[in-house]
Image 1 (cartoon, rainbow, N blue to C red):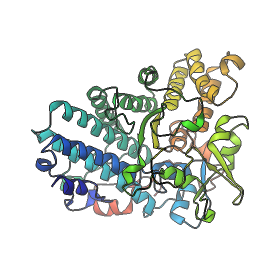
Image 2 (tube, helix red, strand yellow):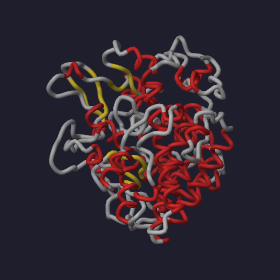
Image 3 (tube, one colour):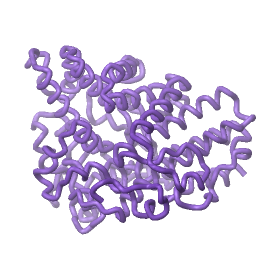
Image 4 (tube, rainbow, N blue to C red):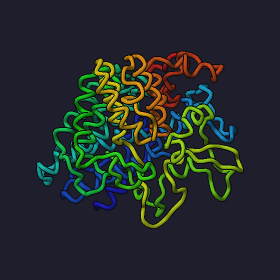
Length: 458
């Protein structure tokens, strides 16, 4: 019975808000009969994260689509019109990739809600295990809503599995969504331990929750709290550190990794990451490759920047530069690279920005120098110790783009939260409009749910 039910858990549903009760709904009285099946249900959620469009790292992922929307990625072949819509800021509500992004995120939320409801009624799972699984599940829900609210703005805040209620759920305010994100992350941080239970960094622990709390508070401009949470993660030096060799950052269970996803979760026997497959130029049929780095990004990094040397590749045949953070395009056997979701370098950048905003310039300089030193660049503490606050914040802008390119749409979300979209994107996007900062709600959702209103501009 448990195998069947877990298979049902992994079934995808791209438009679950609009359909009759799914036949893969978790049967809590069975799935939570034992701790083993409850643990397996949570593992199923991790596996689905590796396969879901929004989180998989493949073409329909946040990483690729938001990268195209920003100034870091562009298409090699512009015949894929639905992808081109993201690059040209000409999205339509019928866009298939946009539908996949939205639908897969809400499918993930459904799975989490189903697990949480099952834990709530189970009498067979120990309180300790139930608390941990609840923390892990709530984190995944918070993580998913973080991207929904930043990509679409106000979205339905769905916290249960009643399909009739979900199908007519109206959009909630951004404040309400962020309040729920913070509540879920607070519970997760308190419910989880500091270690990785399996030894693999593919499972969520308390530091994972605190790392996302640091980011959320940064986005909310709660500078003090962003500094507090990032400092807690950075202080865990026995667990996390910055490898001096940039080629080690994206390896499985890298000391920089706060949370990763394993390609084993795809269930196909392939052990390369989706990011490696989509970003590295196909070594056998280069013309089958999809995306390249923009010339603007490549030129943005100085020639001596180790990130340009180690994380950017060049394909002579196509005359294009590509992201090379992941080194493996296709593989079977032991997985040596995992998809990176949260890592320590971002925490230093979060704290640098939060400190600079609080006018702790020396603290911000120290954090930025951690990133610059590894990249082989001149240190601010030596080269420009008297830097002004505004210039220091501009250094944060630069280092975030250089460090986090092709990772989870950081550049797209950063430019939006800094309110510099017109300045950054309009010069190379002639059709740019202020309303392009949000993606459209999928047309199918609007047709099925009369409570939903479309974003402005669509």
